[in-house]
Image (cartoon, rainbow, N blue to C red; front, side):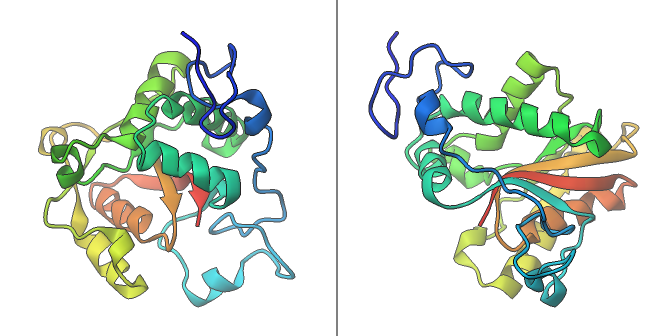
Length: 226
């Protein structure tokens, strides 16, 4: 069936990520983060060396974060279409880009991905697991090993509604290992996967939970950094 680009409205044709609703012309506008980057949060460095000012003032509690893009312009539009407007076909586009991105991170080669779980309230209200859908495609089409071992507690507050310090406090109690997984032999090292990072509180909270079970988090990979 014909698919129209969510950005320009033109027919997408048979793209490598078909039937995702974005054409190759609009996809080419996306600008990945280029070095030099902060060795902690992965954002571009501007008149800084190795570590950005933000990470010097508020260091993250995991080894490093590796975002593909900055959350602005076309990336922000596509993320809004995917998360807010429910354009689920874009999961195939994000999975395509993530597969290429992960393949370039040779230090993380072969490590299983642990998706950050969604809020249960979102699913009950008719939403969908945005990261989970992307992971399903990565597993089926690119043979990426996915370990959905984390769950989100219902009482956790929504991160975007909180101030920075509140985000960190909330994240430390918002996640847990699934009970069905606690009696299994865990992997020694994994990579976290989320869509957007702002303060790093969510990834740090997930890291703290995994470390309690002897699982080391090598990095957090995200689509975009806000």
